[in-house]
Amino acid sequence: MVNRFHSYRLLMPLFVQYRWHVVQAILALFLASAFTLALPMMIKEIVTAAVAEDLAQLQTGFLVTLCVALGLGVASAYRFYMVSWLGERVVAVLRQRLFIHLTRMNSTFFDQNQIGELTSRLITDTTLVEQVVGTSLSVALRNFVLLLGSAVFLFMTSPYLSMLMLVVTPAVVAPVIYFARKYRLLSKESQAFIAESNAYANQVLSLIETVRAYQYEAAAHRHFSGVIEEGFRASKKRIWARSQLTVMIMVLVISAMVAVLWLGTLAVFTGDSGLTAGDIGQFFGYSVYISVAVAALSEVWGDLMRASGAMSRIIDLLAQPVDVQDSGADLKAYDISFDGVSFIYPLRKNIQILNKVSFEAQAGKVTALVGISGAGKSTIFKLLMGFYKHYEGSIQVGQSDSTELSTSGLRSSIALVSHQAGIFPMSLRENITLGGNYTEEAVLAAIKMANIDAFVEMLPDGLDTVVGERGVLLSEGQRQRVALARAIIRDADIVLLDEATNALDAITEEAITSALKGAFAKKTVLVIAHRLATVMDADHIVVLDQGEVQAQGTHRYLLKNSDIYRDIANIQMIISG
Image (cartoon, rainbow, N blue to C red; front, side):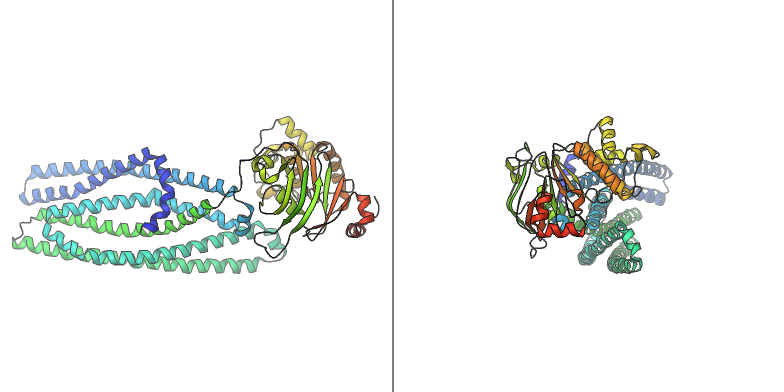
């Protein structure tokens, strides 16, 4: 049992942080339990007064019972508020921690895990924890107090009948332990199918245009339905296990209670036990409390076991090493040098992505990386930004090795414009600034330089127009120009352009290229390009093939001295510089 609940250790610091609310919730819980335990005593007084035909005592008994009921209602309401507040607060903090941690995970982690499954952990698993903290723990503690309190009052009322109740207790507890273990395993299996279905739905919906273009809907429906049905079958087993547990508990507890009360009633009629009708009423009330408490604890046990698996998965995620490290030297100079860099992706150990790559990119100049797809160009950008740390060779940035630099400081000095623009479902202004604190003049200058100022003026709310999921309200070219504006306003000393103009028409591309010469004139600019026309004027061009540097130099030099470059130029009908 200790191991099963060990996963809840993550919640202890949060309970300590909000200890005053925990104390209030516990006090309210014990007060409500005390009022609840007092009710059978009131039943005894009322029954005794009724049998004795004592009207004054009967009226007093009813009045006190009403006062107890009022106190019970107030205490229960306050307990509900406090534990619900704790549930919402604790899970809110837990979700924040989990989200922040996920955003700091290294790239290898995201290579190994599906985004949909991670969001399922963020939402579904934390919802289970919320249910436990906000409801189940309170219910468990309340019923445990009632169980103990009722047991004490049972012995005070009739030790003989209480011993009979104690004898039948093992017959009730044994199935609880067996079915709770079975329920926990089935709950874990059910949650796994939920995570799988969420991950697949996320993939399909994020690529809905491709799904429709290739008429993949039917196959997607079959796959998703298959996962859902498997999850339903797992949930059905879980529900059946819990139903068996419930019926066993109810039947065994009520049967035991009825048997004991039958013996107690016979003892009253014989007059040998010294029990009165009021005692039997009080004993019956506490017996009901015990049966209800045991049944409730069996239900809560299932919830605790189910959430225990969720907590284990959350702990596993939080235990993963983060990527961002704020130690090391700050970036001071911006010449970039790759010296014999070799790299293999952790999940593709049999494929050499980069093999002893060496080149230099000087500040104030444009360095272009060209080559066919798969040559390793984008991987160079990933290594430069510190997405992967394990490689052979050396990457120098300024006078420092990249491993000695602060990762956050390095990335704050880099502006990346990818062929995937990365537009968020928020306003155009927020997409351009991305949390940065920029003046209105800086924003307007950036959109003008990115050649989207005319387009912004036509939007209904201008820069405050919400552009939709992944920028669906923008064309591909507009999305890429927003990404360019984002890089311009960042004013970083290193600029990485990964096919930054591949979605633009020739006229707009020329206008932006001219504008960028002014915006990035003093920067260290690295450009990945498949169209040589966009990098013919680059100061230095590096030709990559199968992860190796085949040649490097100017456009004119490479046309004469690089067969690969010349072949690409001929295919693209660029035969001279």
